[in-house]
Structure formats: structure tokens, C-alpha cells
Image (cartoon, rainbow, N blue to C red; front, top):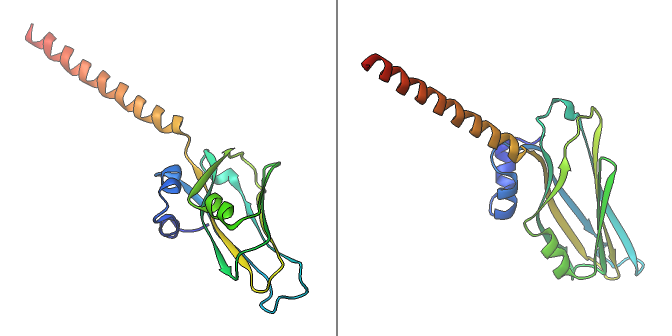
Length: 184
């Protein structure tokens, strides 16, 4: 798991992702999915895939919302791609996003957080990510940077604050009534 400092450095300048993760997030990984075709152009139509699997024992993690932050996407070489297929799977769910233009991919990968739902308690929880680039030209490429983490439930923080306020009010009332009785 990345350190909090590494996660903050990855999130720097990505305001939507920073807001989605907020304080108290537990970071599970920082991922760079990079694909590129051969510089010599190869045999015409070619596909290249980058894959990453994160295996996490979530039983020791605080509960919360599993969150994927799409930090940025950029061409690495050439003019981009013919098509780009981004897939991720988590806890029996999967999503697929197909892009046919560089503008679509850059928009999707540009500071775009996605809440994936409550993190289950599982000793063998896996998250799979793949990026497949189809190219007809030499040297085409794209890479997408991701961050994965667990964000505390908003309700947990709100309940803690509410509980503290109730306790503070109770203490203040006790002090106020206690003084009134002594004066009377």
C-alpha cells in the first residue's frame, strides 16, 4: 500500500479526486497503466494490453467506500490510438469503457473519481484493471494513472461529530443546572 505522502503527491492538482478521497482515506494502490505499439509500425493492426491486479486483505481495513480516482491520461507516443478499452473488475462487478478518440479518453481519465460501493470484509479481495490499445500506426501509445482507496463513510464521520455535540451539550447543561442549584 502506498504511503499517505505518496498518495497526496499523486493527487496533487487533481481537485475532484482530492475532494472524493478527502481526509481519512486509506490508499490501496497507485497504478500507471501504459500501453504502446511498436515504433516500427509492426504488422499494421495490433493490440497491446497492460494489466494490474491488486489483492488486498480488507479484513484489517476500516470500512468505507471503495473509490477509484482517475488522475490523468495522456498519449505517450504517436497520435494516440485507433481504440482504447479500459476495464476494471471488483467484488464480482465489472465495468468497461471503450474510447475511439483521444479526447474521449483524456476526458474520462482526467481527474475523475468513481465510487465503487462499500468495501466488503474479505481476506482475498481482488481488483483487476486492464487497458488495451488498438493501433494501426507505429509508436502509438496511451497511459492512464489511477489511485485506489477506501474513503470513510460520510455517515460515520457525521455520527461522530453529532455524538460529540450531544455530549458537549449534556456537559454544558449539567454545569448550568449544577450552578443554579448551588446559588438557590
